[in-house]
Amino acid sequence: MDSNSTLKLRLDKWLWQARFFKSRSQATDAAAGGLVHVNGERVKAAREIRIGDCLNITRDESRIEVIVLALPQRRGPASEARLCYEETAASVQLRARHREQQRYAAPAPASKPGKHERRALRNLKGF
Image (spheres, rainbow, N blue to C red):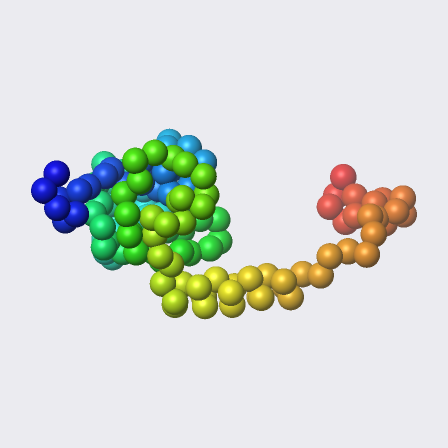
């Protein structure tokens, strides 16, 4: 290839190699479901991405905004995968705020429910 601007890789393959998804089919499904946007556009899994593209990835309840820094040759360890992208500052702050909200949302129970509490829960649910 001539230069870095002509290097390109399929979106689903990049997401898998950069370890955002455990399998390539999960990455394909996420792109098809509209959970991945490239430069603000909803795209298909076959979309070719280049260095410098901005990706918005939604996984579970979290959103991650990253900039593509490299196109990996293989799915290597996580330390190699982190070198392929840079998370934006706004995304880091948003995820930290979301993590704090989740931490204070529902306190963990002190212990498992006992016999009487389980019976009350079953009656409440109508079983």
